[in-house]
Length: 87
Image 1 (cartoon, rainbow, N blue to C red):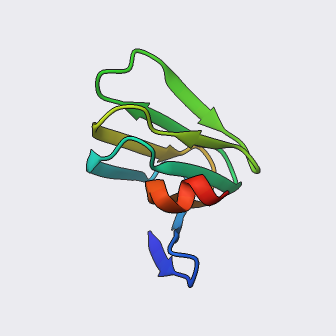
Image 2: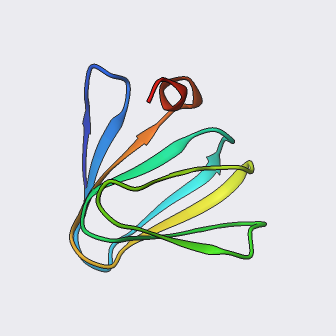
Image 3: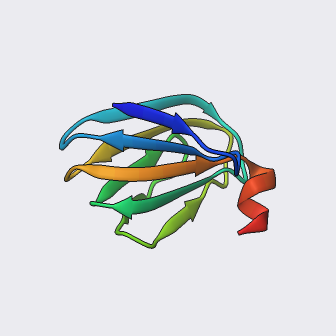
């Protein structure tokens, strides 16, 4: 996994196929956006799973653990609630 910060305050990340990115305490309002590949996202306390393709995003609704798996090589960003509101 590669992580790069940019000036917009978003974290740009890369996962290879089948890699998993774990976030123990993701805050409501944070946004995950897919730039390349396919992401599978699941969150504790949410019975649904989410698939994101390039150009799609997901705003996290609950505080807690989030798992992000790369179904293909992926590039994606995670934005804080403040940055997510700007987009």
